[in-house]
Picture 1: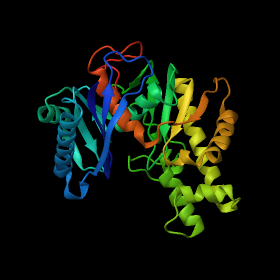
Picture 2: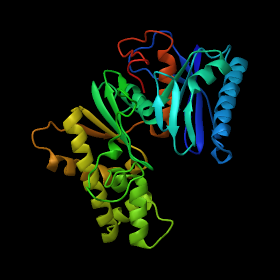
Picture 3: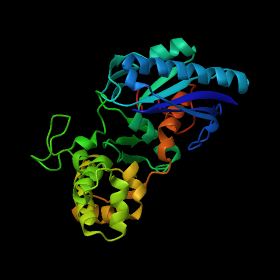
Picture 4: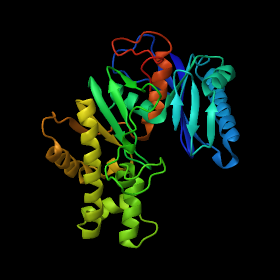
Length: 326
């Protein structure tokens, strides 16, 4: 079986895999996991060191595949955070990695000697959820991971929309509380300042008086009936519902996939969220609201799907990664 290199670059860790790919996979078929590994990004040593770590990690993965999987990888896919120009293959900006305008696809292709696809981390995760995860079979979906921040991936016909300038899906910067908390983006009252896992953790730390409290602690306190936690949770769910209904009105997805750390609260999140969205909907058709299925493997699997797409037609769910990308 041919294999591809898949690499998901985060702010602290890089997750990677070697994935087996068929020449003509059936729609919705996941690549086969052959090898998995992770390494630190080394961001404390600066942006140039991060790029060097990525290139070195990819080269080591290629060497492992050549030595243990019967031949070299045939393509590679990499997902990175920040602003990403998928068409041009450039990592335009990433605050948590400190880089600007890095020609990452070209650098990786030179190092590996194979075609390389570059994607945005959230959109790449959304690609995986849409094709082989919770959105499998859905023609149109919206994937929203609730983590340190909030972003989104707009799924259309087996692909994910990047937008004209690479900003499509930035739902976390919908203003839900005009004049509210300052956001690093320059606006005030953005959704992610109220409904991200980081925001919930900060709010619960203030209410509970515990500096080390996080969103998971708040969810546990809600399940135990703590009134302070319930207020924090209610405020976050209300803000999230406001942002989601704005997105639903614009995009009309059939399925809304919620992922990230906050989604790990299960029905503690999903029951009130479905109710809050339902109360706000008037003429809109409510989407099916479901938890993400792939967890923290989504970005890596999505990078593998991007790499597989470079190899040629892959059945009815085939998308051109230069046109509709993750």
